[in-house]
Image (cartoon, rainbow, N blue to C red; front, top):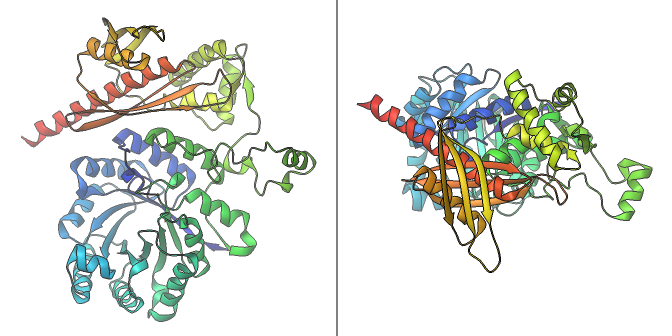
Length: 513
């Protein structure tokens, strides 16, 4: 069966989603999980965009061992040099060079004629060949590019020895028949086209990214490009999990499949959602909370008689367990460890002790502890930011005819006790004002969101906040059955992230002197 290579751009195109700002530790955590998922190629970032992005790409390049690590580059020598620097230490480096080719981009963005576009791209590829044995070339906005010029550009790329040529539907404009026809046309009209792999990169502006990508596969595409959960600019990218499961479920139709470890899909989706703060809709294909839920009486009757009446794939395939009630307050440490291993977590003794302690606290508050609860409390602590501030206690006074008041006690640097009280126009606002007074930090709350981790009145709530200070942003997360406590935890976590970023920037400034 024909193999379809998976190019993941969660760390690059996915991070360009409005409101998403991953730090290096978060990028590394996602990179390790993508490696576990079994992707073939990982676009770690755009090194020329900023010194921070270059450093993050370099960290990923040195960390993962079984994936081709890719850096994005415009058709400029400066960008190519930045990718060279960023991919130092990578076991299998690749550069991804792009240039727009459509009439609207040539006229309004590049202000170039066709021959200038071709010459610019060719010059960049020849410069990159001095340093890279693996090159991917993208024709930005290929979907709106004339077919004859596209053939000319792809032919040039083939002659220059690139390994992969990407044909993006950059603005999600095409429909499946149009997009598939492009690949068929290139296969039939570009000399020596068999020397390169053709890649499909689709955006979801009209909701057709998955359908377009599958059409490209049917017409000869060798590689698909996308992100976990379909995150990305505007309406997002092709969701990798949708392509993988479509090929798996309809093997006889497509005659192709990926080599992904499908049982890691659910965990990868949850991690990306958690670290980016982008909530997965309940009705999202494959990884939505309701993807394997059945409420209709007719559906339930069919499921009880034969699951395949209403399920074309099983939750176990993507790493989910059907059982929801797994552990309780009487469960012991050994049972907890076994459960974590069964769920795919390998924690060291310190991490296990911390997770078990939090589990016991949760079990005392909830009648039922689900798999979702356990995953949330474990994953919250998988990435540790140095704790300058630690939330000790909060007290909130609220009435619908009185001014909300909050009192917080915070431990600084594990020894200094800070305690302050403040009012606000709501309970959360009062808590945040009290934290600001206690820490002395001047920050702006740029984003605040809440989601339920599991179901029921006693469900855990997860709060995600984004704080900004002097043009530097940091995300924080908090988890608790009490949403006010979760809000406080998230705010303090974001403060610690900001402080760590300040230290990083300070070290860079000293190093540059």
